[in-house]
Length: 199
Image (cartoon, rainbow, N blue to C red; front, side, top):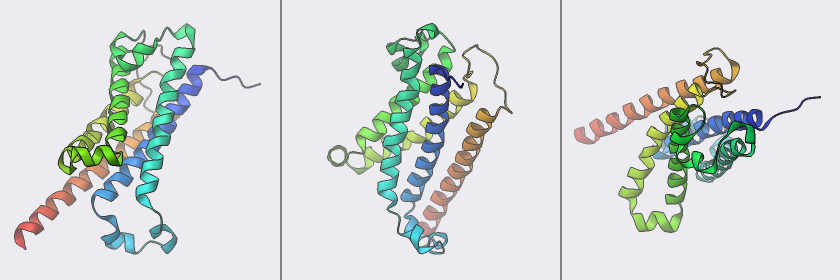
């Protein structure tokens, strides 16, 4: 009979959260470039074009947030691991791999900041420019959660990453997709600026 430990479930939730946050980030990038006007979007099947990407983006952020909280919280429930609730906020006190736990903590707190500041009444009070600058932190958060995911030992035994492990490959693939997406987004930004100057 299969028996999963808190650590096993936490790891699985972390990988799910990583995948969902990658998808969420990609949707955010599409929203930032007025995707409905892109020629490639107009070539997609109509049922895809009808998807409300803003709602889906928000929904996946909430689900990913819940997965991240569960991922971290389960570590505290396993008394053998020695994690305390404060280790989830300030990871440098964690009993295992404190630097990489800290990167996970920072990305979790940044996710909370991003979600909270996206609430309509808060977003209005912040103004677009400040809200946008806070939202741009998600690029840094992406880097933090991928480094956290790649370097954390799934068994918390301080082992070096097994780059070909199936779980690590999922995270590495997500990191590669994000890197390519960020490069394309930066390229698009400079193309738009260049076009604005020439018009």
